[in-house]
Length: 367
Image 1 (cartoon, one colour):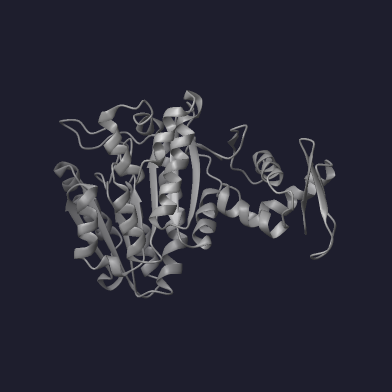
Image 2 (image 1 turned 30 degrees about the vertical axis):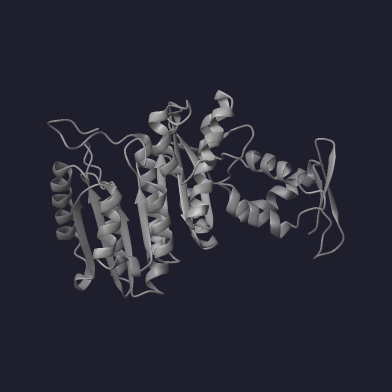
């Protein structure tokens, strides 16, 4: 983290993985949005200095590179709204953005950048309003050091400002753990962060379940804020240090594109993903032939909840919206599950029924 004499710090594996994911997602997001909207916005509430000790670019510079490149192939305009609290980091960021503009100019000046010194809340929302960015689709990154110190009200205002707005939030377990012990100093902060008192149920949870309980309550908070679809996954570095990443959108296609970005093979970051729904909490190796054992367990657990059965389309939609896996991985997995006599699938279209035996209970779903 920044010290009294330096404004940059080392880039850790989590950050490298987040940046790879951000780059890939923006490469998909920007062309789609610009093909349907005259203006789109990219915003950050914790922008940082724009560079790391090793010379690696920060997220604002990565976003600039992707968006400037997209504008060379697309019409429309892009607004970037970047907020940074530390004046030294802001000054460094301005230099890094200027260098990026010099090396990769935006076509016809169609990429407008506003860098503001201030706190994520309330200054980010004020800058989005001042620049007119709330009238256009926006991708908002809330990637604070340690945890996103932003209230639920900010998420709700971002969600309500435009139906195509999306948000990506990251935080570590230590950020959540402060809310687990019932300390009165943190209750008001927790109520503002979670948007209510539902999270107080953590006080009755066993220690081993507290972190997951609060993670799920935060996902509920994004739903209540107005983000109909959320994607939650965990990032594990080589030392098994954990980081939560939660993505909110109103459109299933946003979830689909985020997953496509996530599942691109990346062997350089040293970070693996984990699906919170997997009862075995197996870390995933993202490779050309990924291990779908966690998805197998997740689907079997899901089938146990429906005595009347599930359609294959339902299982594919559930996989898209509730797991880190992709719908295209469902059919091959079901075939292997049939070979292993875990499921029996009748071929054809909306015909008859199939039986799934799981834990001694027979569940039903239709193809």
